[in-house]
Length: 318
Image (cartoon, rainbow, N blue to C red; front, side):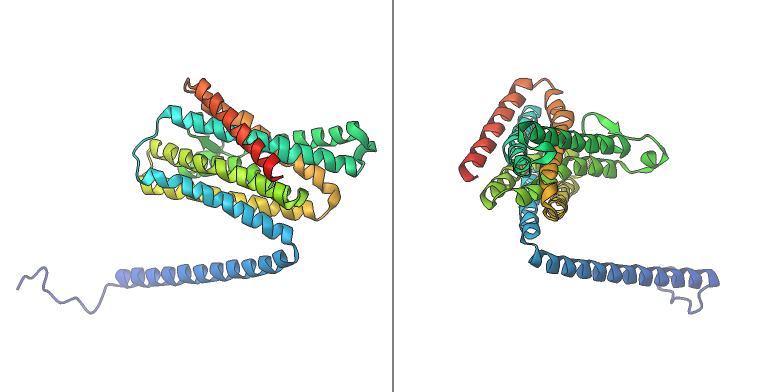
């Protein structure tokens, strides 16, 4: 008999051990209780939202469109599980493709319908000058909102590095969450555009916008997962975080549709705001990232292809 391994346990634990065991049990109970309360809250929130969506079909359509975009992002990350690397030239080409799709979506699915809505409502005196003033102001407001978020929220880009306020809160955040915030800032305007598009366009044109964004989300999800992998994260974690990055889009879609559909007067403002936010992301994030490694020609070619594809989708389906 081995005295060190076969000795029966002491029935009387020291007070410190008993206290530690009791603390662990209480901690587990609190954890499970908190989880149960959180799940109950989520269930109640989802039930209330479903009742709301049944009376507001535009919001439900926006949720479905945003969810399709999130699913496309998740599908784009799957090749990372099979492939080790993707060339920088391919990444920059895909960045350019996404920028082209977003540019065409801004022009044909957001700005032009917004001008038509502003003219129909005779905002700012009516006519072309009034409609142009409304849309121009709303575009600048959307870009200014994203610029303020970019300056105030701490986040980290895969190439440019850390941005935002450099305070104690920023320094304490883990690098993973800085990446998550950067991806959320990138995807939020896309979700807003989908939601506002359903609130302001007919079904076919809104579907074309959601389809175009979903198409460019496939390579975008791939690029995000590859960049996370290159930043030193494990393959499975990079794929899961890349999939989760698309969840911002249905939230933004529901928010955009709910706000704009509440008042017809908000429609041109919402369309312009979403366009301005997307234009800021294109100019401030996507195009500089695609030109940073010396593959400008491939990035520009991808941009042209993406723009043409989205234009054809909008004109054929809208």
